[in-house]
Image (cartoon, rainbow, N blue to C red; front, side, top):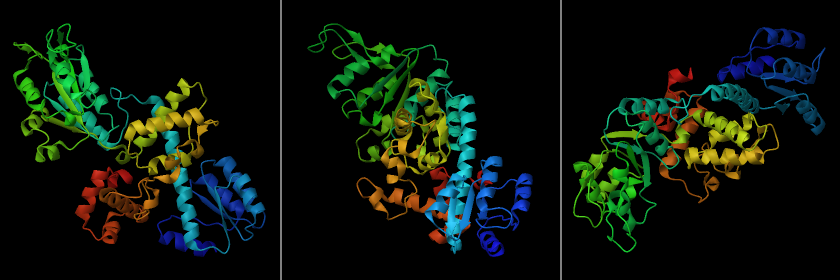
Length: 447
């Protein structure tokens, strides 16, 4: 049985060592590192449960799968009590054993990653409030460093919750204007009839409630940075006035006859496709080019890989302190759920999820039951194509469907791009391009 299992597992990419003596197996385990152990239950000289207990005591990070012909509830309970990760009943199909081993190896990998991230989170030095060491975030840090000392206008784009204001604040903190004001305005949050006064100021008596003159935010931000969030929602009537202010570096207060100079750096942000809005004539093309001198695109959280776990560990420690709870981390099962979820709300949603989990948990680490129902498994980023019942509205966008299908193929073919491309029926260049867009690790990063 050892030989048959070893041949089959090797054929599917596993490196396998076999022993038919429990004593020799323990000796081998003392000398080498293994990702998982598979043991029979009934063996001469030592039972599989005793061997399992030995592995758990001496190699607690190595998951054990117990094979048993009995398959009774008592046997399963005994195996779990001995510390087994899983058990498989005989006779078994090799696919079942492979699946159990895949899960066990992933479980061990996640536990190792969680331990690493606890250390990383404890020693992490956030980049001006931004946290993450993925390739996509390193590119963001590099862009911030390169443009912070200039006064060029910057456009930050990204989905809601990706941290656009944090990037704007990082630009300010790294610039020569760091001692000046940082003034933020959400263009979508101010009524259109008040937005002009908010930006450019007004003179006394300009409108009913204008009992005193006041400077606008452009003038108030002189010497620093003005951050125009949700610039894509700026009313069409204000767009030419904003364009003129940016070109002339002067503003005319509402109701006034003169102009006032200002000296503020312009940083804008949006979660909308401004180029599409330009094509649809909802946003002025000349204004777009004026604010888009430097473009900083922010990646969605789902494409940032293990940054998800690094951020989660950071939030766990923060809220454990806030709520005065002794929560130190998360289980491997939680890590798996966090990595599988698609995070439509990005970092903001992850932070909310972790805050809830820390508040609810009764354990020293977050467990799956502490997560929101949709994160537990109701809306997974690994959902097979066509499994639309997991979506709240029962429907997937084509882009999301394609993304999940491609990543599932990469998972099935263990990261082999050639095999995945052949199975998907696309050329390798197309697959490489799409994987880069998803933030999938390069081949050298995975080796």
